[in-house]
Amino acid sequence: MIRTVIRRLALLAGCLGTLALSAGCGASNTSAVTYARYQVTCCESGDINQLYQPGEVFVLHWMVVPVSPTSSSVPTTLTLTVTLQGPYSSVTGLKSSAPATYTLRAPRVTTNDRSTTAPTSSVQLPAGLPSGYYNLEFAIAAPESIASGASVIQVGG
Image (cartoon, rainbow, N blue to C red; front, side, top):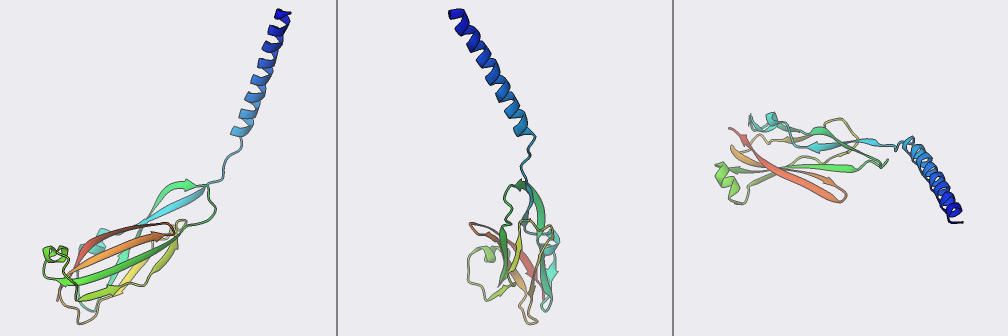
């Protein structure tokens, strides 16, 4: 009787193993659908490393880089903002948190994490804008997060 129970247990274990193996093989043949995603970051160095003149248009070129794909079919909306504040006589003065005389804002740009097109933000610099250093603040806002940063541009007269 013990031999019969042992044989049946061995047979049952073998059947369960075969069932588990076939179920595992079937699961590996189905692939999950994924969607490409892109991250927007700031910005091309040429946007910052040049001298701007009053009356020009300051154009900030956002960069789009691929990130890991997602299983969500719903794109995430991204809102991009750019602000210039100044003028300051030096970078040290800009970093001192002294109040700015001018605040210039680019219109908000809306995109999403599925777009491969690199957006741009533009700020018209007034013809009478004083020379100096301007604090460039930029932000990328998603529904539940925000990433921001800052740099310095120079306007010459």
